[in-house]
Length: 175
Image (cartoon, rainbow, N blue to C red):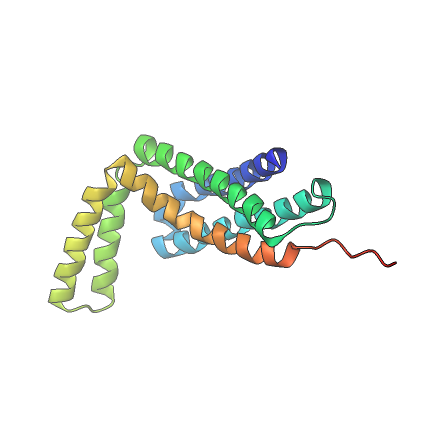
């Protein structure tokens, strides 16, 4: 199981990390909303590797027999490795290359609220949330937790669906 989990987890993590590295420098040019759509699309594509990892484990290790529980275990381990790669990449990108990301994102939050025609009270609330976001995002532990929560739920969903689809009980021999 270890080989399949590492191979597919690192592959999924490399895909999501590479897409992040390709798109993040252009977020000012493509826009925050388009960057978010592109980013989550890349995360979903990277998460599809989980399906192939579980299938590979079933066919090459488990002898074409796989319970939901074992499929889930393989998938969640792949997800954890992939998520760790994504988080590690973001931490390097954020703290070394984009230390002003939180400021820019906070400004975007306020601009989006203004563009939507929010009331002055709603604008004040958004400004307070943006300031709070900037403050807490400086803490590496919170930064990592928030980044992990961007990617992990998608991997969890793909794992559950894949485990359900790929479970396969060994046929009962006919006597």
